[in-house]
Image: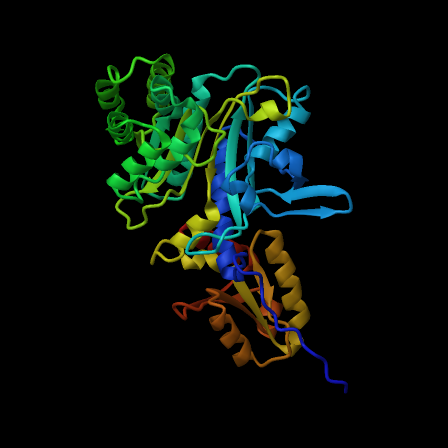
Amino acid sequence: MEKKNLITPKKLQGFWELMPKEQILFSSILNKLEEVFKQNCFVPLDTPVLEYSEALLAKSGGDTDKEVYRFTKGSTDMCMRYDLTVPLARFVSMHKEELAFPFKRYQIGKVYRGERPQKGRFREFYQCDADIIGNETLSMVADAECVNLFEKCFNALNLDVEIRVSNRKILSGYIQEIEKEDKTNDILIVLDKLSKIPFEEAVNMLAEIGLTEQQCNNIINLTKTTGSITEINQNLTNFCQNELFQLGLSELQETDKYLQLMGSKAVIYDLSIIRGHNYYTGTVFEAFLKNSEVTSALGGGGRFENLCSYFSDKKMPGVGMSVGVTRLFDLLSKQEGYFDTALANDIDCAIITFDDTFDAGLKLVADLRKEDIKAESFYENKSFKSKMKEANRRQIKYVVIVGEEEVATQQYTLKDMTTSEQEKLSIEKIVEKIKSDRMCK
């Protein structure tokens, strides 16, 4: 036989791949989040992975451009989506005459960023997004609804989080007040690094941008403002009388009012929340685990007043939230006891047959599956003992033994592999017992 040059199997660095049992657990997270979206009246949307470069890069810039996977096919210049919000803006602009506004959509899908892979950061990862898009105007109720929805997502995952909320108009208003609007992005980049760099370094960086020593201290102290809405009001009402600053403070108060009505419990106001994307214009928020060594955000969101203006003359403000579920799953999978590993088993029961009862066992599998029981037939030509060992290896809780007597009486031996207890039951009773056991998990 001619010897072949075999290719060593390997995957691209930073791209994600799970074993089946892990994939089941990951899918369980996606299912819980999707159920939250549906319960809150968001409709599904699935945009293409590839977009025209001129559309996807309409409002990116900076580091984002460097991370985008961009290539050409013939004369077509295209990119792989790096988030789900810009494709949403393109979709809404294309179909604005067909949609009912406010348009509330959710999307769960993979996005791609060519950054350096590191702990918790991947080049291919899932995002779970939910957004509300308005037509000309969009009430602040939408901002509160997205924050509240964000909280509900983490509640559904049984995670104790703190949702930190701010409004970028407050910082932008102060920057306007000190007449440094042309340096807004440079200033925000420095402020976004405050938790990672020394105070003196931040002051020096702001001074290089053109701020006085007093202005440096004021804006840094402003980003350190945190607490309840009452505490925010006490600290900021007289801080700056700039109109945009006061509008941001007023919007924060209005958002808090609606959040209280919606029953949110996990919100704290924190002006250090800026968000990296440059299309956020008002409300911004991020989620952090309480009492955890993990200090990075689990996701976030905010309002974008002008995103659709790159695609449409009509003003369509929006607000949205995103959970980085790939990173979240990577984190949770390392926490002992978070996942119920029994949920990762994709088989309720294994059907163990003998040579003379194989056909009857195969029919039993079909009958059980009709009753929503995940039954599997071990149909390889192996001994009874080997099949029982295989059930143990797969950690299948129940086996159904199908011998000649069972076929004749229609009473099958159901064995619990965790306790070794067994009893003879009809198909109906087997279904009842397995479903009852499933409900108790």
